[in-house]
Each structure stands twice: as C-alpha cells, then as structure tokens.
Image (cartoon, rainbow, N blue to C red; front, side):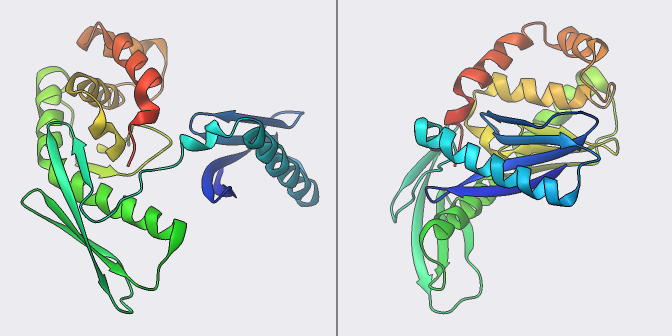
Amino acid sequence: MQRTNIIIDGQEIPVKIYRERRRDVRFSFTRTGGYLRMPSQISEKEAKLQQDKFEKWLREVMQKKPELIDRFRGRVYEDGSTLTVGKKTYTIRFSEKENAKYHTAKIKDDTIHVIISTKDKGHHLQKSIRQLISRCIGNDRLPKMTERVGFWNDRHFNKPVKNVRFKLNQSNWGSCSTRGNINFSTRLLFAPDEVIDYVIVHELAHLIEANHSAAFWKVVSDVMPDYEDKEAWLKKYGEQCNF
C-alpha cells in the first residue's frame, strides 16, 4: 500500500494506492480520502496511466461536490484565536522569527505560543501551524490519556502496554501494534469522554484479537456493551473533529 496526496483547489487530499489480487481497477472516495486499487501484476506503465486517470476522476468528483473538500480543510488560525478541546480552552499567540529554519510552539499556562519562520507562507504554513498546535495539545493531554489507557487496561485486559502516543492522523482514530504501542489521533480529543474511552477499549482489544473478527467485537462488547453508540457518534460527527 502506498500513501500519497493529491492537491485539489489548494487542499491536500490523502490517497491510498493498493496493488492486490484482483482483475479490475477500482476508484473510490470515502470520508478519509481517495482509494485506487489495481491488480498486483499490472505493469509500471499501466499503473502510471491508471494513477493519472484516478487523479482526473478525483478532480471531477470534487468539482461536482466541492463540499467534499471541506472535510479535509483544517481551521485557519490567527493571533488571538481560541481553541476548545474537551473542557479546556487554549489561546493561540503568534510571533515571527526572521529566516528561522523551523516553526516552533510551546504551551505556557493555557496559551500556545507559536513562533513562525518567515520562510513559510500560504497553505503549507497553515498546515504546519495545525500540526504544531495538534502536537502541543497532544503533549498536554497525553498524561490524562495514558491514565485512561491504564484504567481500562488494568480493569479488563491486563496486557503489557509499552507506549501511548498522540499524532495528527486523518485516516483512523487509533492503532495498536503487537508490541503494545498504542497511537491515538489528536482529532479524538474533540470527542466526548465516553467516545474516547471507546477508542481506548477498541485499541486495547487488539492486544487480544489483532483483527476485526467476530472474536474481536466480542471482546469489545464484553467490556463496553453500548460500543455501537460510540461508533455511531464517530461516523456522524467525526468529520467535525479536526485541527
């Protein structure tokens, strides 16, 4: 599987390209981005041709339904902007640093101080700002998240958890490796506490069942019988959870 982005109307649209056991080529678009599926034995020349056709198809889809692009647009931040995450509201302050190599950000009290390099402008600048703010808030909320993971693990799973991390991930709400590394999307922090708890339970359940088999969902439902309500919330409101 190959991950890439296609820029449409100034917005990056995440794309996944699969080569798999199949006879046909399939284009699709979901709330997480575009998907191109091709036969595994396809030639490089034909693969490039199909990628070009897919990009043209995706642009046509976006032209017909421009509102689809909005789900991938993050917020635009200005000096003094506020951002409420859970029960906490952060104020964002900007300053510029001439010819700095990198943007930086740090939290002091409930204020996020972002130092911007004057070398960066436009769409890429706002993307960098969103990533910085996401990282700062993720670090600020990580101790509480780690505590919640420990609570559910100790109560129901008793499995070794090596690391808990946040990252700004658009493609999923969480992931869990066989080594006990659990990652959560910082977008999840905009969800209600009970939905966050569900995603925690979901990822911990993967330490018992690594796939999404019936056995996996049995583990989840034994711990959280109303998990489908949380799944429904994510499907209905998840697009609003974004930096």
